[in-house]
Length: 197
Image 1 (cartoon, rainbow, N blue to C red):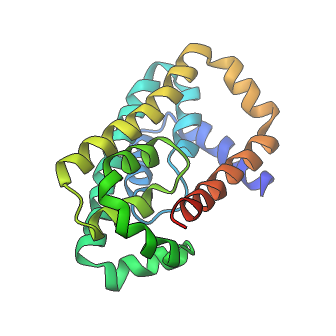
Image 2 (cartoon, one colour):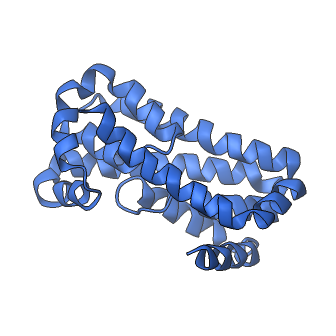
């Protein structure tokens, strides 16, 4: 797994200057908010390291397209929960937790969406839950955008400020960072399950 992540990292650094790289980042940001399991950070970080002057631009792309993709997740929950949404929730092993979650969701929905946008909590589960519970759409959009933007712009600011040392750190500790990434990703799923018990 670590070797695969290393190859992905090296490949992303090589194509970061490609004329279609930004569209790839937009597509991953969009898809991750409803169905895709890998977060856009995996692509954004090497792209920003390869071109620090565009770090904030890449953060903006991630923020915008992640929010737009969140609306697809919302629509899946609102219109297609029985046919598509349930399958996605089942895929992540969260069906039981999701049922409990719905009852109290809208009371804290805005904060939940904001928190999921900012943290490793699986954002796609939250976007679908927002649609199922018919959360207020303007609140959903605003909290999604600000949660996602804070996350991506913080990463961009660190890369812009520290650049090469951050790149050296990532390359030196690629194995440990890969493990930490997957621990955080799995921890996000566990946290959601724990919070709704």
